[in-house]
Image 1 (tube, helix red, strand yellow):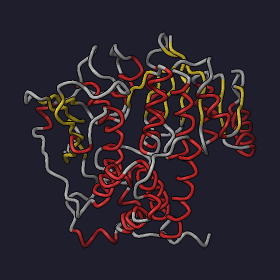
Image 2 (tube, one colour; image 1 turned 180 degrees about the horizontal axis):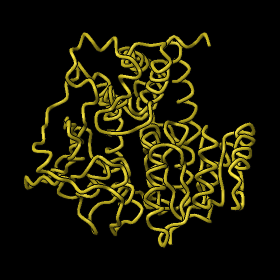
Image 3 (spheres, rainbow, N blue to C red; image 1 turned 120 degrees about the horizontal axis):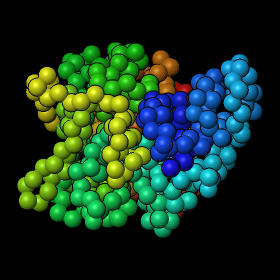
Image 4 (tube, rainbow, N blue to C red; image 1 turned 90 degrees about the horizontal axis):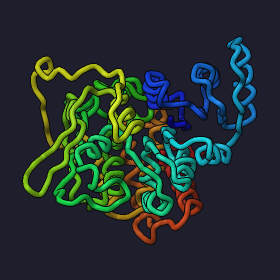
Length: 402
């Protein structure tokens, strides 16, 4: 029986995780759930899954949760309510749980994910920023504290499945023997075939209409710019100890081949499946076993064909900027992530054009503070660098007057 803390319970990854958990009540118990905004949804999930603890961001959120719980009229005992960022990290390290799903979007999820790793837990990592902003710190914590790190992003999970087990490299254990290249696949998002001169007029609703996946608005925009794939390249570098030049991106519109591993003997192993996040979630929860995830069987005859193409960096400049940041160093990766979060926020608010997202990132990456130098040596240094990068990015995005 595994006891699960779910950081980011009301998002798409959180809900998919709870769907898988509910299919196996003999294997999993929900210990703690967290959410940033959706208190009625959090109350409903806590009652449904008998969570012992919930974590909310502040006192107003606590009061909204209490009201939502009372409105449920449930006979279940109310969970303990913990409040604030410190409580979030403490709950991720709580000895009452042994498995942590790190699914909080953005840099806000970094301290709690790091706390789970430092506590030696099984960490199911769906938070890209933990590695993008603090890859060296995070992987050191995994190695030194004996944490079990299992990637949940479909691409990294696919690569993990295609590496040799047991005895092959796991995340945090060094470069896998005999591997020549990693291939990360990408759908290409909703604008893969658009004329380039149309991209400046893209609306938030258009950018969030992903052709294959159902995701939150921020990550949907990241998919449309392919910034998400750039972050995944950085993640793959840290997870699998592969040099940047050995990590490639390939556009695959059907999203059936989730990623591939190319070996020195010329073999290429791929993991295929329906585009449903419950597959990598179930693999992470049950590893090394496999359990039912509620995912439909893959019917290749119905799909008919699988297409692949190289990404066009004129169409997807954010991907090129991500590669640049990885080669520059950890400080540039912090700046890349911070600038993107601010620029996407401005775009979704109607304050910035779609094509200007890359311009904000490029401008911040040109700042001398982020063009090299020593990697941040502590979480406090990472967060201070992130804060400064966001401050400048807000100015570049026209948000500095707020």
